[in-house]
Amino acid sequence: MPGKKPKLMSELRRRGVIRALAAYIVIVWLLAQGLVDLLPAVGLPEWAIRVFLAITVAATPLVAFLAWRYDLTLKGFLRDPADIVAGRRDTTLRSSGRTRGSTHQHNAALGVMFASWRNKDGELCEQEFHSAFIIGRDYRVDVRMKDDRISRRHLRVYPVNDKWHVKDLGSLNGSYVNGQSIDEIKVDPEVEVSMDRHGPKVHLLVRVADDTAQSASTR
Image (cartoon, rainbow, N blue to C red):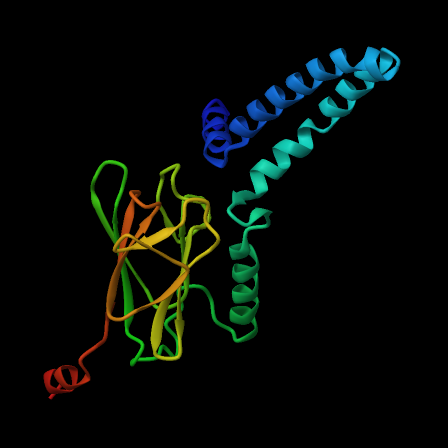
């Protein structure tokens, strides 16, 4: 049990819940100060400020919940689009009898996607994928990168026919390739994406098996 409390606090900080609550308290305090000065001018009773404070206190759990579940993006305070994508993907995989990471009926022409990045200690990490995956700082994503500049679900890498694509999931700080902001691009055969203009980078490389070399080695 003692180890769970620090883990919870770390998760609250990572998700931005503590930051959101602190901002909420400051906003409520400023509004309350404004109401105190405004009440005599508009003729409202003094108990109006108590009602306002009671409502804001009651709304605190809702603020915490929203901060836990959602990201504030450039498009507004929206549900993370990757939640919808992941749900649809899991439904499709279950209906076809496949699971995440399955290589069953893998398209040889598509190749294997290799993602490489450096962790917070500067160590090089690499992972291979045969199906779509998500990059972000949420603990539930496939490639987790711990950096505040990265959104919980920042990038989605996925195959379309015989090509791999990478798409920004409405991230707060955006995604960049060679200094240019991108929404969606093709990985052909490799690309390095920066999350935030000067933030952490992930290198994506497609490797296609050499069928000729494989057949020669089995003779």
